Amino acid sequence: MVHVEHIWGTVVSIDVRLFRANRKTAETAVQEVVAWLKDVDTVFSTYKVNSVISQLRDGRLNSDDVDAGVADVIARCERIRDITGGLFDPWAVEGGFDPSGLVKGWAADRAADILASHGLHDFMINAGGDVAVRGKADVDEQWLIGIQHPFLPGQICESVRIANGAVATSGLYERGDHITSPHDEGIKASSATVIGPDCATADALATALLIAGRAGFEWFKKLPNWSAFIVDGDTTIAFGPAFA
Image 1: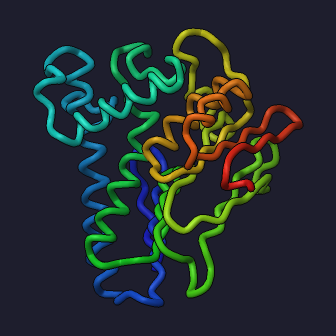
Image 2 (image 1 turned 135 degrees about the vertical axis):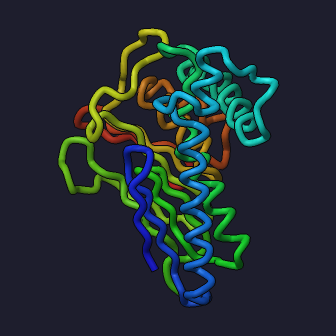
């Protein structure tokens, strides 16, 4: 069962496999996820004047006054900023704090938790290229996630199989220059993909890895359950257990 939702200026698809699930249960769970996605837009949008993030950005709200979800996003942003030596820095953007480089993956993780809470086992959530999966694609088959080639539309340059985890890709090939280096370092890779246990971290690390290029592989030496893949011109480079 597949549901497609147009939201956040992108597309979120929810693919639930029913070989060990009830369709009615899945439909109820998906509607709860859709409501959650809309709530995320209300809270985290940088375009809506009265969103929590907009109020943080212009000083109407203090970070001590936010709810647990927003506090979790802030804490995760701080952690990735430390891991990447500031290449992922939501505080170093024009207009103030902007966690957009992590929130999409974070929302995909939470959406997966909602589906699981309804007793669903096997599903994939693709939030505009940030993918969270649980269980299997079929009875004896793991999910196969393709990584889009940045220069050849519609073509895959690599793929990975995962059962429970996330794949996030960052690049400039779909939405143009929506990613900028926070401290004017420039962007070193054509696209960057991160594979690991949670989509929030994968989303943020992929953004930073796009900026860092090959130098960013150093981060993953301290992240044993994580893998990374970059396209650098005509070269592809893979690192980590997903590519073993």
